Length: 163
Ligand SMILES: [Zn+2]
Image (tube, rainbow, N blue to C red; front, top):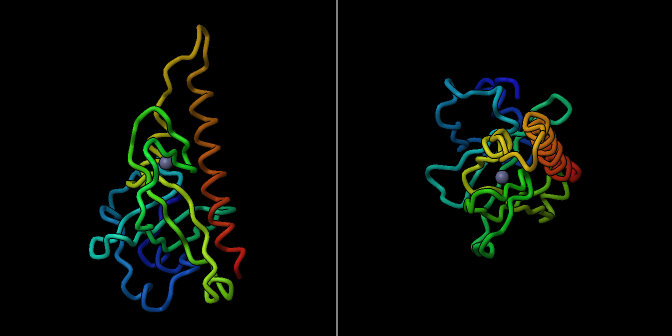
């Protein structure tokens, strides 16, 4: 994704209340992030353990979403619905987002399973083991990265649909 300034990040949020926006902690290491290897940006709130944030490019525009982690832990071996990584038993969290606009104000939310540390981009960029002789590892990585982008943007679009 393209690099974002602190003010562009703040301005991108579509489902944040005024208070949430006022309290919004910036992602750690904002100045040194490797933006070109990120398909979306996700971080946790250092003060509120159940609060997290993602910023997802949708049609070239950043869309920021405030997320809440469910109390319940997903079943063992749950799969992240964004990167669909299966190679590591990485923790996955059930996160929900208030939809933007009137729908969100009426309590409408959308939920999804996501890697708890938002390491989806790393997962998608990791070369898979060659499945067979002549397996095109680079093409497989490209496909996974494209799928991650589409699924992340799809989730953000669902949040936006509430407007
Ligand atoms: Zn993931």
